[in-house]
Length: 138
Image (cartoon, rainbow, N blue to C red; front, side):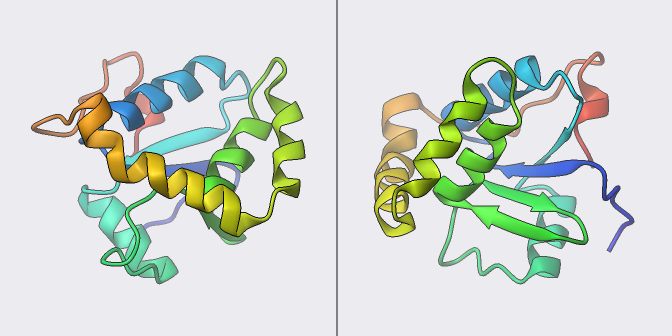
């Protein structure tokens, strides 16, 4: 496993999904503390991290928030943990963590299941601009 900074939180995302790419750009625009780094699930590093933390991707195709040396979160819990670290009113989303995970994950799964149909799919993973390339791990 490559040495990942324990001071950065790593968001693993579906690099082919238009909704996921929009979400990544949304987080980048609001990540004033430069806390997050991004890795496509389809990339070699993404696959290596997933294997390292022991997630079976045949049973889950989801956003993953990985905090090296600490913990990982997926589905609705990952989205909520990410939102808490964004500026503005987003830290108030912490209240949604009171919703039982089975219910918030059901909503997450419904959107995830339909994301390609509703938002489309790319032929290849997004390539960050030179200005954003430091945010993406490879």
